[in-house]
Image 1 (tube, rainbow, N blue to C red):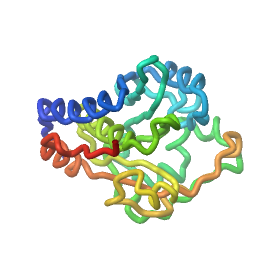
Image 2: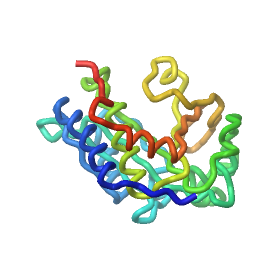
Image 3: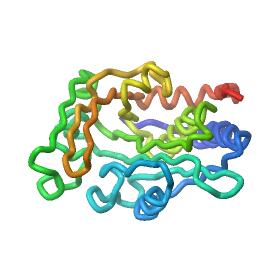
Length: 233
């Protein structure tokens, strides 16, 4: 389904969230080279290793098929990062892509361990097809937590994804704790999104699936009047 995106309204939408970040003392910028992204995140204290989804050594991302954001404080030190990439699931669906491990590795036969595996129990995942954007690798420095930064990041990621790709779906995976603490928008989420084991990465997850249909992205952007960002002081 082709969607008409009002890019002028998207720019207004992004300005709302960028201004909110500036009021918190954070300057946000965007990048497209994932070699640079991994190099930066590896130098960022307290941030865990980036999952193979966003690492060029295991899952290369063509220019224009992914982006990342970084926020820095007044000392130009990193306080937040997040990344997103586009999957073409026109002939597949999110559940199959996860369970085949192609969601994590460009070539599972080359990169995956024999004991690696992923089970997707979330029913909606079988209906998520077409142009699908995944956003993840979210990290916020400790002294900036509890200030609404994930909401600012979510707004920016949504606006950029809509402007670049006008996707059919945008999705994410996160632990149960994030649902309980209402860290993200939980109006559309299901448990069992990714029951994952990646041996060489030392990863064992049981994540919820969060998703936003493309039509909802457009409605969110078009309905933004500047009052959408109510953040803690």
